Amino acid sequence: MNQPGTFAMKRSIAFLAVVITLAVASMSHAQDRPTLHMVSVGISKYQDRRFESGVAFAAKDAQDVAALFAGQRGKMFGRVESKLLTDRDATRAGLAKALDWLEANATADGYTLVFLAGHGGPNALGAYEYLVHDSNALVASTRVHGAWLRSRLDKIPGKRILILDTCHSGGFGFQGAPFAAFAACGAKQQSSEHPSIQNGYFTRCLLDGLRGAADHDGDGRVTLAEAERHLNDKLPGLTQNKQHLTHHRPSSFAANLPLAQVSPNATPPSQPSQPAPAPPLTFKTGPR
Image (cartoon, rainbow, N blue to C red; front, side):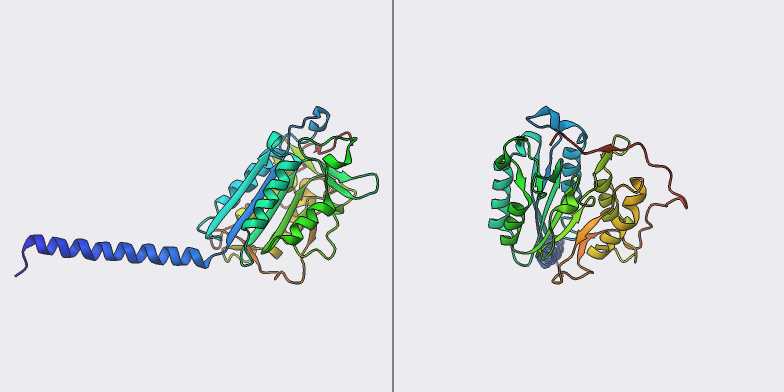
């Protein structure tokens, strides 16, 4: 006949074995999920204060996107590693260093995401450029050229995604790029924001979609194609038809590539049959 102490010890050992088994299973499950490496950049404050018109929420856009994907740790992704650069930290050198980090740490079986919000547009030759915190309107070398950014992304392994919330972002030059891309507007359009939503319209639409509004089949995952569809459907209505998504999906990317895990069969936010008029737009423009 077992003594009470022996019985209690056996129960403790059995309980500990169950805990260890569950922990090992959880770790194994996390390892089965891809890792996300992300650089999220948003600039509302520039050294040249004239650039600060129209980008009051660009830094918050970057923070909100970084927070959303951080929340996907243990859901869509086993690990989420990120660099957040806003305002004075978002210099050309700072961005280059963050991309160096991506190149050194991203893996072929993982995801890599770069998000940029702030000012962007064509230079004198018509090529897309992104303005960082220390950009000078008269010194081309202080701006981030789209071709340079593309060359950096070309070297980074994994499933790469570039997201741009700037004016004229559709003019980046995605043709033939080995990465997927979402741009807030066409090459000749302006990206907009408004205090009522505390974000750029494109960024807010993207966030809503990745939180579940884009899960059109209700399977609990938002895919690349579902995000594209959501932004194509919703962004023009939010911006009085002044912004239209520009996107790129290389042939190596499956349409059902998952981007986020959400509650299965979640009901997207209800939409009125006729969308309410959007608030007056504040465009992300500056003295270029």
